Image: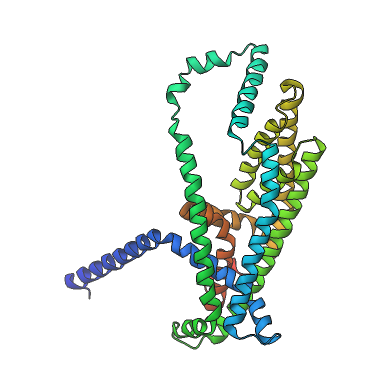
Length: 363
């Protein structure tokens, strides 16, 4: 029989547990950047581990030398990609006048004049519309400085994140045996087989996912390039490449890429007639990019999401949406690898849970 004292203790215990959960949740939210670095480092370590093992067993490197060599390989690969594309983007950027502020101002003024003339011919006075809407007073010109500061902050954060991920990955790869032993001690029973099976499945699925993602970005870049070449857009390759890279960001990236392609197309045709060349070309390119995205959403993405990580597209969409709301764009990028890791761990350690059974039936 329950007494008032028992009920009071139960209520206090529930309040205490709830308070601890809230405190823990708040703490995790505050260190979300560190958690993201850890997750990326774990994923990167799993991708790099086969190279470390190859160097250790085939070339007889010591463990530390194998890890350092592997990290140097990835750093050189990153530098190689940057050195390959930065000169191209810089030279093409000069042609687009992206790096010349005076040229940007001249082109934008010219574009505004062409747009004004086009609307005036259709009985729309853009200056009158702006004056009547009192748009100038509503604009906050510090947005430009805020945006610039945001870009600088993003570049700085990316640099710090890159160094942090490589630093953490070094110890994950170097001391992975100690980490595995430590993980085996956390569960109450001997779960060595479960841990090893989880690591192998995660490595296999993530390898398939990243290979599929690389194939997807290559296909999108080629399709974007074809669209731009069909309509004779200058600097087609660099525009196609930049827009394809943005597809790494699920759902938002393609939209931003289409806007970027439209702006760069207009700037590339700034010296042409606005009504007969610039506007139609921009519309056609935008439609072409929309068609490419339809192909990607209905062909490429389902293959990667469904075949590579064995998850339903709707399931992936909800996961990206939820993690994106919690951790922003970075969360959206790592959502699928993180979800895949959690699914594999769930299936290995909680195979009898009904929800996990449904979510992991194809793994």
